[in-house]
Amino acid sequence: MMGGSRQDVAFCRGSPASGMVWNEMKKLIAWIWLALVIPALASTNSATRVYTTSFKDALKIGNDLYGSLNEKYQKNVNPQVIQIETSDAPVITPIEGGEVGRVMHQVSVSVGFLDLVNHVAHAKAIDHIQPGFFQQYVLNLARQSSGDAPVEAPNIVDARYWKDDVMNDQISFFNQMVGMTVAIGLSHHYLGHYNKYANQMLAGKLTPINNFLTPAEWEVSVRQAALNSLDCALATDGLKALFDAISKMPTRPPWAGFIIPANTDIPKLNKQLAKYEVDYFHGGLK
Image: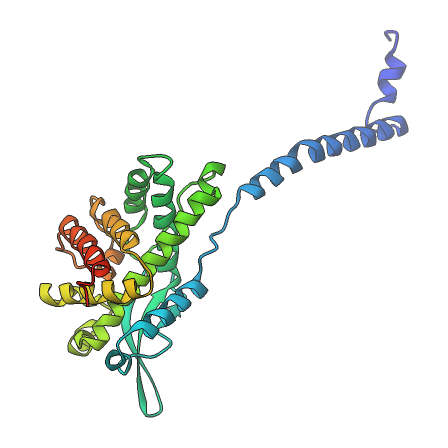
């Protein structure tokens, strides 16, 4: 037996001495894990962000839109304009509920739609500090959005993307997108479009009202929605960004039909939205 073999045997796992050494090694491994892994996990968790804009903000926007409507239009809609649906699919549509002795005209907004708007608003805000981000996000969004699948969040972990100035832009775009899209849905009630097309919309699977609107009906809805939104201090930039996102998609996902008619000339429409805003501040949009 070679010299030192007794010591080697003492460190075998079966011996009492080996047990002590093994326990010390496990403690050392545990300390290394605590020192290295936990800070890494903490760093990961600190990078997990959530948007401050939510369904509560959407409900408030809906109430503000109702409050700014002409009284003759208010009679056709529920003061609680928005009904939140838990669906992950991005859907926004005029609906009709009811209570004893009263028809309740509202706009149904899904959780998936609010997620979509949050992400598009954030991508647009990031584009201000990193040009090209919006385009990249839109292309990813188009690839990820098949059928009724939930819209996945963009992969944004860079701390620059969550700075106050970026997030202030994100909030503004969110409010504008929600305000204008809800205002359009609301207009379909007081302009009579919903009553005209409800049976076709609800025949089987819910179909977007945009599939049935004439170009003239869509145009008047957008105009009324612009007036309604601007009365609530909600500019048109957010909606133009949302429309622009849809126009950049090689193939539009099914949820896009709930936001805009399929054959709409989006660049032309966005120019018209900009004109509505200019006209509004010069007293020409009433």
